[in-house]
Length: 68
Image 1 (cartoon, rainbow, N blue to C red):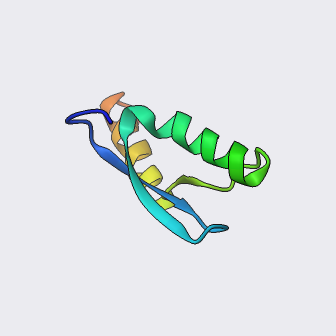
Image 2: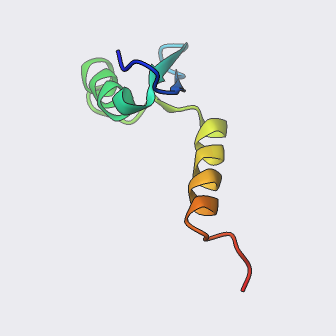
């Protein structure tokens, strides 16, 4: 587990599960879950609400939300 890394909520509606994964491990963990339990289909993912918030933070950080 990555010490000090923020944890990101992951949801899998097919398994009816929700967990938190350290940010650096999210991509690998979700891909492994989907491969092992869902034949590679993208079922588990970052919680959509959190994903939207992260996208907003990144866009703001890159200056994409600033008006000209």
